[in-house]
Image (cartoon, rainbow, N blue to C red; front, side, top):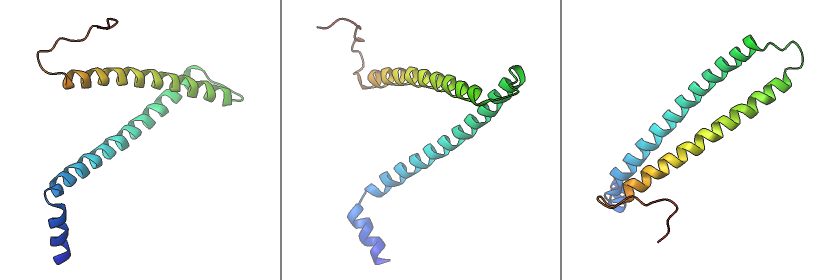
Length: 108
């Protein structure tokens, strides 16, 4: 018990910050896990649609490769758009209120 008190003294007020950070991390991991489950469900749905509308009797390896390439390109495009969107949101949040938005293409 004394060791716990000593740790609390050494850490000080950071205990609440550590709890908050740990809670945020855990919720982030849970959200990522649920996202993975949803992604796997969509994967099965898309594969079912492809099998239904484009049945391949032989060598379906190439169909799987094309599916992987197309899905990868779509995901990369979506992630690039999200990155740009969130970067703009972060810049808006960091800018002081009342300051004008920067005009793209013009350098002062």
